[in-house]
Image 1: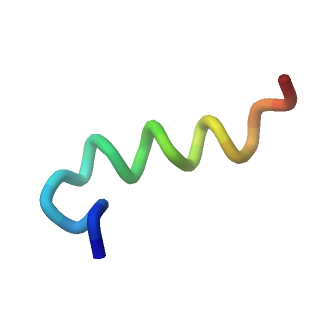
Image 2: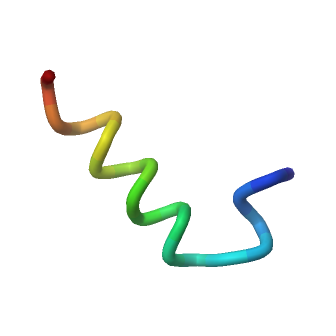
Length: 21
């Protein structure tokens, strides 16, 4: 997976998914 190289990316992606635009 592209996000597996950095845990920070996973956190950022999770925040994006849980934060409505």
